[in-house]
Image 1 (spheres, rainbow, N blue to C red):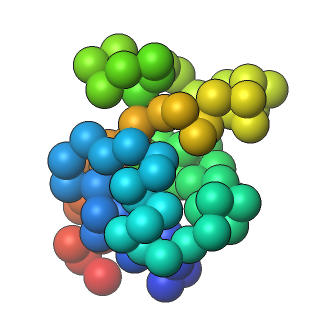
Image 2 (tube, helix red, strand yellow; image 1 turned 90 degrees about the vertical axis):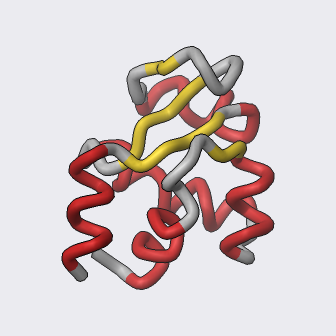
Amino acid sequence: MTDAEFDILDELYFVTSFTDLSQKTGFAPALLERHLRPLLEQGLVRSFWPDPDTELAYEESSFGAIVRDSYFLASKEGLLQHNSR
């Protein structure tokens, strides 16, 4: 896990919007998108769209179109990896 991925997981103990996550981590939106992809692909982060209560499975083809309107939460596996570092 990279330092950036660790920082992202650190903010995802609760459902968090993309905008709030960008502000809390200090990552520009494009950079945050780049770091979220592998976390989602590995199942370490769950995504929600169009609201924080509707989980949406990660799909590479649609991710870019909806990522900035999505919400995120660390998965159980993501929290375990985050806390074991």
